[in-house]
Amino acid sequence: MTSASPSNLGPLNPGNVVSASIRLYRDRFKMYLTLSAKAYLWLIVPIYGWAKYCMYTGLMSRLAFQELMNQPETPREAYRQVSPKIWSFLGLGCLLLLIFAGAYLAIVLVSLLAGFVVGGLASYALTAIFGPGGGTFAIVATTLAALAVILLALLWIVGRLIIAEVPMAVEPQVDPSTSIGRSWQLSKKSIGRIQFVVMAAYLITLPITILMTIAPQIAVVFVEPGSASSAALNLLILVLSLAAGVLTLPFWQVVKGVLYYDLRSRREGLDLKLATDSVVDTAPDTLSDEPIQ
Amino acid sequence: MNLFNSVRIQTPESVELEFTLAGIGSRAIALVIDYTALGVALLLTFWLWILALSQLNQWDAILSVDSGNLQLWATAISSLLAFGLYVGYFVGFETAWYGQTPGKRYAKIRVIRDDGQPVRLFQATLRSLVRPVDDILFVGFFCVLFNPREKRVGDWLAGTLVVQVDPRTAGQGLAVSETAKTVGSDLLARLNYDLISPDDFAMVREYLQRRSFLTEAARQDVSLQMARQLKANAQLDALPAEMTADTFLEAIYWSYQQRNQ
Image 1 (spheres, helix red, strand yellow):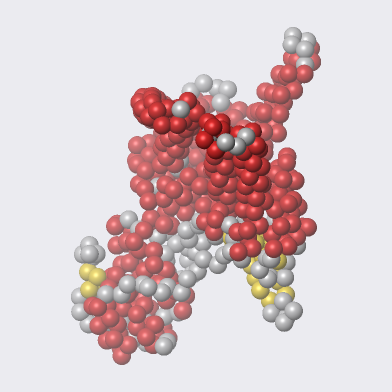
Image 2 (cartoon, chains in turn orange, green; image 1 turned 30 degrees about the vertical axis):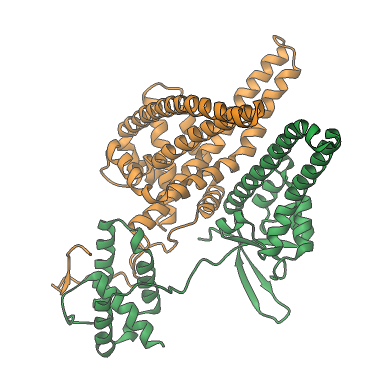
């Protein structure tokens, strides 16, 4: 038996991607939290620190993936693997930022224009049939539909690129554009399932987000502005929202690592290996290398 | 490594059943789907009510009935409909579909009783009635997250568990080409099947089930690797004819099935 025994977990359904991520994060809570805190601290330092931040996020996903592969690494070992690529991580981060910004602008612009045209026509038609009630309904419905389209399009693009940094953190010799290409290719047939993963993961971070960031914001209403207690409250809000970020960042990174494992199992048969994976048959045989079908 | 919680249930007949618990992720997905469906249905009811109110106003003269009276009826009917939807959605589906709702069906999970039996009207109603309590301040979320049996308050009261539906299928309907069948019948005579472990056969089946999802390159790599190893394990010196790795794997799978029938 080789030490690199293949994992037999295989593809996971969306819910199990999220449940498995929760389990991995909880089992190594201190380790991930320390890494996340380091990542956040580095954000204070411009450029070099940001590169470090990007590298640490990739490192967390790598740790989760390696654990699923039954080849767990310590953070130190993983660090040794990813630290030479630190500037590539920053490049990848910038590239993603540009892609997302461009996509966001395009999507919002197109939906706004389409919304005006469709909404105008529909409200005109429905007013003629049902009276003013119909027109109002048409406008409300189109606005909701346009918002839904914007949201879905954004989710789609995020879904296709969600694991963009993981190939670079895991695979040797991958540059930023290749890593993005890998994410695009791996997510090709799974976009619907990825949406559900993102949705479920978001839903699970929601209690933390609400309790730690939104609830304190409400308290602001009850405090006299400009007073000492108001300043203290603002400080508390800052600390709490940072803490919420530190707490949720590893979860998202672990989700990405698990998703990467799931997609590679699905698309590349990562787990499809025989248990007796030791014999290497080098003799020429009659099995052809020809493309199948 | 155990990524998912599981429970063992002893039935009165002393049969031990093991279930994998649903997990917070699948339950979240089921909840999103069900609440979306329910929300759309409620919105539709609301819209119909508004429409009815505005329309009834104009029918006053035609029907020669007091429109205020009719509007009251419309309001009463739509309130009843909304209430029925809200309460009935979960109770109805969970009772009729043996513990599943549309969301749970997508997420491949199911509600069962603590003793492994399907839920009935009583349990489904209790779970549904306590649902608002579980939703307030994420009580249910934290219960599922930190409880080893993943029970929310409604599950405690109703004595229910939410478990995964076993996804493994027996591999029916796997397409095996005619060529592979010919090769397979030949292999039946020549291959020593004891040299290949049942796990390896299962892996071949798994590959054949999932090959259409694989990228072309991965498919070639995986099938060739598998075929070479099987050939070596079975101490086959030569194959009857030149063939693709896929055909060989299909032949192995098909002949193994034939042999066990």
